[in-house]
Amino acid sequence: MVSKAKGHAMMEPTMEAGLESGSGTKPNVVDAHVHLYDGRQNTHKFLEEPDAMFEALIGDYSSLPRVFGLNDYRRMNPQVNISGIVWHEFLSADPVREARWAQRLADSSDTPIAIVALVDFLAADLEQTLDQYESCSRVTAVRQHLGWDALRIDRRFARTGDLLRNQNWRRGLQQLRGRRFHCSLEVFSPQLPDLLPVIESNPDTGFTVAVMGWPANTEKETFRQWRSDLGRLSAYPNVQIIASGFECVFGMDWVLADAQPWVDAVFEIFGFERIMFGTHSPIAQLASQVHAPYDSCLALTASRTQAERNAVLHENAINWFFAGVV
Image (cartoon, rainbow, N blue to C red):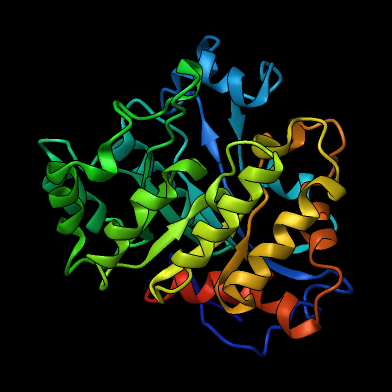
């Protein structure tokens, strides 16, 4: 259910607004992973010149627009009623400025928007940054990119590959205690064992595991190990998982059959109560077989019950990212 107050769009967690209760016959969804941005207002260096790490993930991305707004997103997903968006930072040169831009966007939008802002838990000004995010009422989570491929230098998004074991980094993470923020961490699947003690030692922080735990590749042994490590992660009740970024895992020519076994495994491990789906727009649309990104989310959950689909495509994201949003 969406209610409006002056200057704000508020979302109230309720099962009354089911998946099929959107506008007309369109499914009612909350997209758990979206990038909205404006290269005129914030600096995104990878949009201004080719970036080897982006190219290693998604190939030629030169067709990405320099401005991608809410109306652009809506036109990309005409088959669903967007009742909420979880906005994720887009590697701006000034993350706080970008978060404030997103706050203004959220305040002026009829579509409820929650914000996931960029953070570095080793930064000397971490506490100041978190304080500034506290002043943005729509910021309900922070995230850090920790992906590190030991074999490929062009697939390393962190400064080193051992941050999850770094005691100074762990002390920085503990600064989330007493704050309203969940923590989203992007790691590749070989890093999942190092994530376990981090989560275990921070039981009062809610963690979001991005990109289904980001399988490093699609080989059978990787699937077996990834599944085992996710099973261990699922034992912690403060962990949720987002299914998104399929093109980053299965390639830019991916099809549903590539992703379905992995998605089914996530359902088996986490249950439908702790899974959210996101389109990863607009990057998702660079994939050759993707036209309306939310079609993939709908198709990958087609075999689930109505209650399960409502949870993973709508309610779980409301309860996780929008609780307390004003």
